[in-house]
Structure formats: structure tokens, C-alpha cells
Length: 191
Image (cartoon, rainbow, N blue to C red):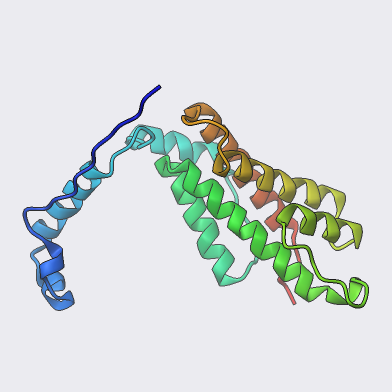
């Protein structure tokens, strides 16, 4: 199987030649035209039309309730938006980053539960197991976060080129639901 694709980025109106102020002063129609050209340029097979985006919104939980730091909330919203727009790999990776942040936060917050001189593992899989072992994560929370890690690894560390689009979308929804489930019950960020 051979893959070859040439991608050439060119705009008749080069933004690189303009200052920040000049870009801000461009007429709205010209800005819209440039962004439309950009959208066509970066189109890929997973781009969702309006109906598909509405169906993707329907896939998500009707009610999302969580209290988390601003950084996590912004990444969570971005991950949800990426799912709706068909940017499933980006969403999976982002949710994996949130899990890494949570694991590090828990390690720091509960460092007193680890033996003196203990150095937390660098690998996320081992760190999550250590958090479970020291009763910082419940079995259920461990399962949710570890499955996010596994699905992220599955799609980031590819064994072959080409991914099943349906599997990617399904895995993304699973990752989001796991993360939302964990964050809805998590009280670690309250204090």
C-alpha cells in the first residue's frame, strides 16, 4: 500500500505580509473569505456537516455537571467540541492529557499517603496503579481513567496506518463519557 499526498498551502492574500493591526482592519467579508478558503484547505474525511454535528451533540450526555479548575473545564469543553466537529483523535488526545493532569494533581495532593522517599512513576499506567494501590483512586475511578489512557494509547501509538473511522468515533465517545463520569463524582478539586 502506497500513500502519497502533496499538500500546498497558498493564499492569494498573504496574511504573513500584514501586521496584527492590518489583519484586524481587514473587512469582515475578506476575513470570512480567508477563513472559508482555510476550511476547504484543511478539510479531511472526518469533517462533519451540520446534520452530523447535531447527531454528535445528541450522542453526548444531556446534563453535564462538574466542578473542576478552569484549565480542565476549558480542555473538557474543547474535547466535547472536537467530538462534535469530527476531530475525534484530537479529542481523545486532549482527554488523555486531562487524565495525566488529574493523576499528577492527585499525586501532589495526597503525597502523604506514599511511603517516604517514594518517587511517583513517570508512566501514566503505573502512576494510576500507584494511586489505586494507595487508595487515592477507587477501583471504579481507576477503571474509568485507565480506559481513557488505553484508548488514547491505542490511537496515538498506531500499529498500522489507516484507522477505522467508526472505531475512532466510538472510542472518542467512550473516552468522553468516562471522563465526564469521573469528573461528575470527583471532589478532589473542591478543596
